[in-house]
Image (cartoon, rainbow, N blue to C red; front, side, top):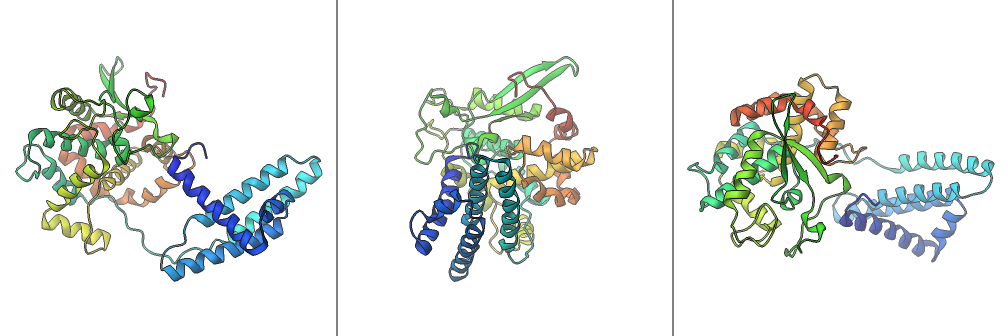
Length: 382
């Protein structure tokens, strides 16, 4: 689990621990370790089935979905049995264990009951809502709910970074001032720009003063992504002209007191924007989500970015598998992640792609060059 964030590792370990406690309650201490060491796949399969039934009963009583503890436990068991089998002596024994493991894996798949089918809400923002948000975050706009010019420019820059770079909220809050770099490309006779997503506080140059410090989700979140001229210019102007000169941090987005912007403050910014939505935009959001009190959040911008980029890649002839692979790299998902597939059906939502034209003409060119951009060899070696 070295690629997982600490919080994700804790979740997985909690599921494994719950399975150990379950077996201990049923059969006594250390029994599970003995079963794993003996490669007793039949007994382990029975223990897993009992654990799953227990988890489902708890979920039914508490009226919630089945927790991920079952999946963590089953993956741990299969992985441990493979490791034990690999350490055994004779090739014949290992081959026998391999067949037993295949049978166990089939049984585990059969035990994984699928929840009742329900329509999944696509969280990419409708174009009408996105257009409304552009008007709300416009620093010169009359509908902008933020007071000072510095606040307006900061929030506008933050909005565009989240939307056009598809960053998670925590990733944006960890960006350093010099996150955007440029290099001249002789083949195009213009500059290329890219953004480095990293945790500046892991470099031991300063300590994160926030009580709830954000973190990168996993090792794949550390990446470099191309950015348009518009975004590069906006980030550069904000970093040099709008941040307070006496800021005691290298973080790009800071509060009015010059401290790194907190997650709570970011949520407050998005809540202010949500409250400023027009009635028509609110109705669009409610209709899409099917929830009476549907709210706009920062993560909706990431979802919208995924859909728009997938739409552009497919329209420009990139095959589905190749497009999904590019999305994994751009958005910081693991190589085997199935997250991009959740957005594949939105390829047909052609209306979403039009919003980028309405906002900035430069985005049309940028989207057309996504395939080329994703194949860069970056100066820093990414």
